[in-house]
Length: 129
Image (cartoon, rainbow, N blue to C red; front, side, top):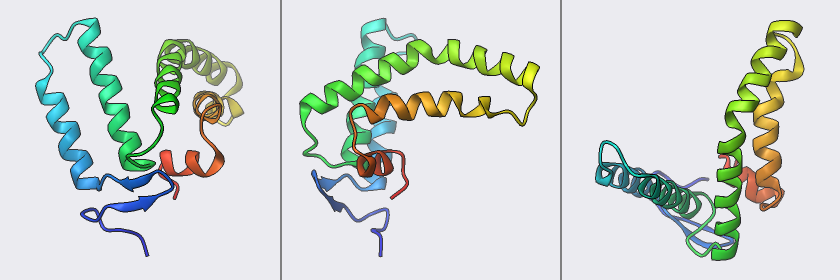
């Protein structure tokens, strides 16, 4: 039986941040940002949000080097997001809504994260555990 939203779960990388604590921390993080954050403030907030997601989904003891690698993946995905969306839109236009192009963005994202995470870690990180 899974943990409730208030119960921390144990994982391969130590205790997992409970859902309620994760959500409160995300709200607190977002509330500290100014309306127009600088590039560095935005980058720091995205990194902090990723660390909270890792604490919640994988465990608070997930190694720093692998967190750094996940942040690099997140930045790479963000840089490619517009291009992939444009490519997907063009494919849908020419190939139709039922084409395989819809898997482009999700396939790219999962493939990038799979360079850092194992299959079970991917499942936990993307909420399939």
